[in-house]
Length: 74
Image (cartoon, rainbow, N blue to C red):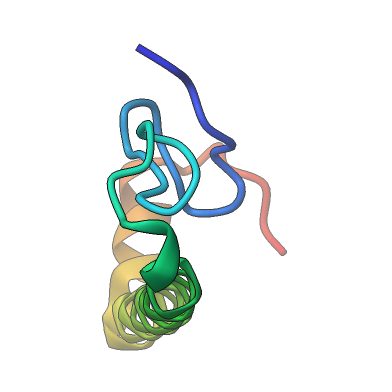
């Protein structure tokens, strides 16, 4: 299994259909596939940030501080 960069929202085994998996997309459609892949990454990253922000805003931080009192306070 090939490990991909984790900081860029990819994990081990999550392949790049344009370049990584042995040409899963025909070469004449590579530009379209790259654009769709990039758009999906951008949207999923934004949704992840929004979900984390919603958790923090709804009291997740207070519950975490009660469960882990020795955590450093920011």
